[in-house]
Length: 114
Length: 112
Image (cartoon, one colour):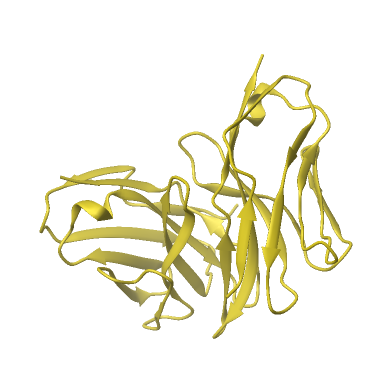
């Protein structure tokens, strides 16, 4: 079945550092790809998404490009802030019986130190 | 704004108790989902529903059941809680055909 693999955490960086969180997927079709973020004590929020190959999703300074040739969707940010500390989940969509299910990676905890 | 609410943020129950977790969404979404979140395992789908009174098993349905009597409400039921059901439970909803899901804040359940 479909699956998502994220780089293992936790990841700790200093403020203004460059961030990359790796994400690769396996899927039989052409899924949409997502990054969700979970801030402390909260549910998940959609951060960005891409629906087809070579699409770039972006939001709040974060970017990720749908790479079909490498089956990847790595999350990047040029200069992180303390407020970016959260758990980040990569996910893909899986259409099934009328409801589009999401398949999640294991999550990567990111801590940004001032 | 889409709002998905869950009945409790924290819940402590005893082994063998029947537990109800409630989820309500206010955006008239057709689809609703229940996940559990465990460290190192990400989110795993327990059950989902694409219409009132319709339900489908997810990846880990054992030990759980669900109820969807009204479009806005989706309940997760632990018939006889066990310690291995201690976890964070997240509810989500979406429009039919849409791939973006909207999540509630979660319920952290501890079974003693």
